[in-house]
Amino acid sequence: MSNYEVRSYKDMFTLYELTEKSTDSRVLVCPERGGIAIGCQLHGLELFYLDKSTFEHPTANIRGGNPILFPISGQLEGQAYEWNGQTYKMANHGVARTAVWEVVGTKAEDEASITIRLQSNEETLRSYPFDFELLFTYVLKDGELHTRQQYRNLSEAAAMPFYAGFHPYFAIDSGKKIAYDIDATRYLDYNDNIEKPFDGVIDLEGLVESVTLLDPKKSEISFRGLQGALVRLTYDDIFKYMVLWSVNDRPFVCVEPWMAKNGELNRQEELVMLEAGGVLHANLTISCER
Image (cartoon, rainbow, N blue to C red; front, side):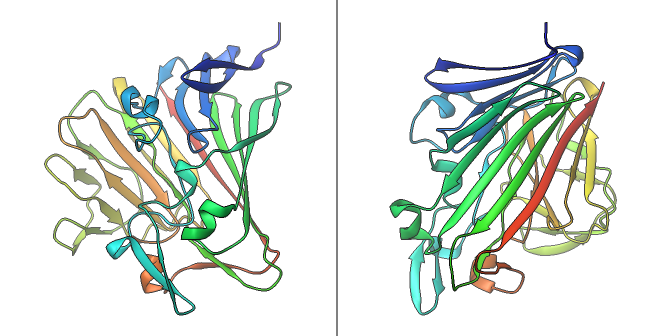
């Protein structure tokens, strides 16, 4: 029997299951609910938290898994921004996480993978007046989950502004005072909007808003998650910020690589400007050691 398998089945929505038998690993992807990976079992341990009721509700924001954030990460003041003299409304974290993605293909040789696509349409253009194509490939190999991303500007004339990111919910079974191995020295606490020194530990218990690690040099972070497993994220340098967030009385922490800080589409100081016809490639890898 093959070490790799990709199968689809119905559970409220159509799910695609990637499996790697040799490492007891499994990834669950739901293209029609924002292209989200709702499950990430590596070496027999499920890393993601998922509130299944929010996943099963067709219009609810999913609390769990790893939502895709595009074209913005975070919020805009008044859920609005101005571009070329016109005001547009945009919900938190953008348009991709609520869109239906198309399955382009799957693979079960040498890896288990699925490639999904999202293209601009009438609905996205109301919030984001740019023609784009996103191609994401989830790859399960050697007990690691890789999310290979391709961002394409389909415009023939205009540069496309964006700052993408991810919002993974990691399950925990202990307190939220956690040591994060990352070489940042400062963080912005959105609970009081004050920059503070980072000594390697953040306690999210009782915090309503997120905190953002500001100046990491290396594009990686690790921490102890469920059952003491060492969870590691590695990602391309374009993800310049690491956002940490949680909700009281829920057993998860979100550890989120973003390309820019909250509200950037209003500030317009660090926007990624993808030239007309241009393509940007990026990758995020999630791994763990038990």
